[in-house]
Length: 248
Ligand code: NAP
Image (cartoon, rainbow, N blue to C red; front, side, top):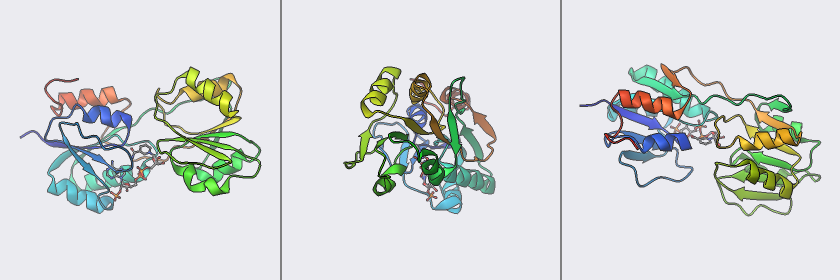
């Protein structure tokens, strides 16, 4: 029997890979976003119960390879996966999307975590948050001199000094320019996600000489095999016969 693969997902890249997996493999999601119902492979939803729970799952489900295609800021699940694989002798492969690097003209202010971002934003008035849902937990802390624009995957009514835009990339330079104009953005707050889908905001910030408050990436565990793109991970999965016979 072909060895069984567990794909850890939650990103667009992971979904693209999951669509190619043959039926006996498993695609795992934390359950925070949409759950696809049109995949050939098995889909499971929800946490495993830490590294120990994941190790038990790997044994029970007879997994031979874990492919970690979670977000670069999903550090907990990646740490758990590395530990669980080491404990059970399962191979740990990871998609480690290359980070963005500052270009000439960029004004990036590197910070660690939410408190650091708030301190770096203190003298600005109209930040655009592109960090996911985290700002939603802080909407009652919007400083009196600020108006926030928060873009994330979740719909939320916002309030008088915070507008929440529920949108999924890819985003274009034209669309970003229109948003920056309309919301009168004077600073961008971002994770260093890497990839093309959400990069346009950085180019527009550069054009307008606006600073970007950039959250530093968390440290991720080393993997036995690391891939910089979904395509290179897909090639490796194809070579190991994990994909459907007709690649799409
Ligand atoms: P996390 O902090 O690394 O994970 C927290 C817990 O969620 C894990 O310990 C695990 O629970 C469960 N979990 C996460 N991914 C899972 C998966 N694929 N299958 C099963 N369980 C999973 O990651 P996060 O909470 O997903 O996100 C952390 C940060 O990354 C956030 O800032 C978020 O905006 C960003 N992000 C993450 C993803 C993603 O791919 N997960 C996508 C977009 C953005 P147990 O310990 O119970 O197993």
